[in-house]
Length: 121
Image (cartoon, rainbow, N blue to C red):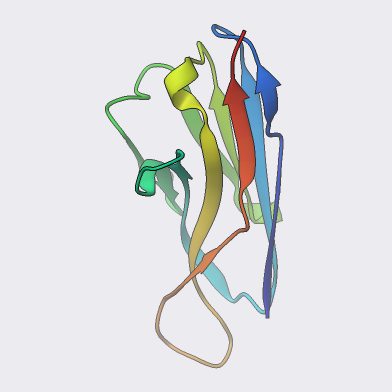
């Protein structure tokens, strides 16, 4: 089994910053990619940022220049530094990993339960 523990969400004023963390543990052989997605009320879940094991990153246009994704491979942890937050960044943020375990040679996805980020004055 795999566990993802997300933390760092909360209430912040517009222009403020938050740092999200997601630590993966369990039956993991290797993590190929880690990422953050978000879902605002009444909207579909969307990609925020992803990072591969080699460090390649991808960002949604709406967060480029404001958010930074990073990872600690030794600790199977991914971070999302969010600066210059806007009210439209309000959403539940979900961590996702693409990984393989010791029993299967293929990649699988696993989602966290989400952490709420509210940007409001």
